[in-house]
Amino acid sequence: MEVMIALTLAACVVLLGNHLNRIAADRHRKRISATDVRSLQQALEVLQLLQKHRGLGGQRDAEASAQRIAVADRLVQLWEDWKGDENRPAMRALWQQVHQNPVDFEPHCILIEQVLESIHVLELRLTCQGNPQVTGICEACRALEDLGRLRGLAVRAANFETCPLNMQIQMRQLCQRLADPIGGKTLTNLIEHLERNLIDAPRISLAPAECYALITPIIDERLQGIRHSIA
Image (cartoon, rainbow, N blue to C red):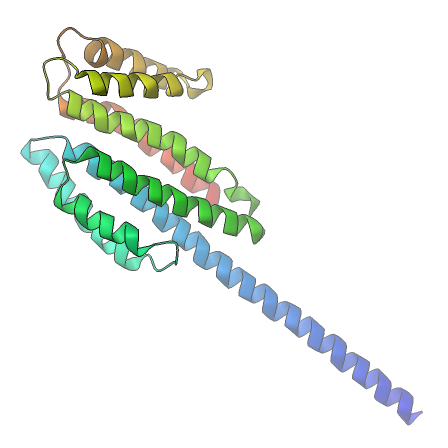
């Protein structure tokens, strides 16, 4: 009888131990998930602000310069706050270059591509942790970058009387990728407006600030939708 009681108690201890281990493992996974969700939210804000910094860097007026400085200040803080291992030293080093030379278009694009790679890493990690709602976020962000890149090019092209050929080619390619029927009437109207008044215009009739103001609300709206999907 005593042997049976001892065996029963031992079995209970083992079961309790297994249960407690499962609870501890579950709590650990949730802590990791919460950390990665925060990192993903930070990465999305970095993406948005880098895209804005690129667009504002192509404008020469005092208002745009003031906005760009404010964006840069926020980015400096974000780089410090973003503690995840996906925030690689190479990205932070490239940010210093971009920060000092805001007019340069291509370094912005290279840095944004690296941020997109970090978003992809976080998406994969969170999906493996049981967070299916993040699936497809990197793809959505890449589509957003097409709009961001178009904004950066349009702002810079608007500083000329006619659209430079290299910018014209790049913007046409971006417009073709963005010309999706499911993109909605707003995006279609935007593309037609840019083609008529900037890309194909004999004489450009849009100011850099106008190009920025035309595209920014669409980018912000789409990014807000991405953020809601992981809230």
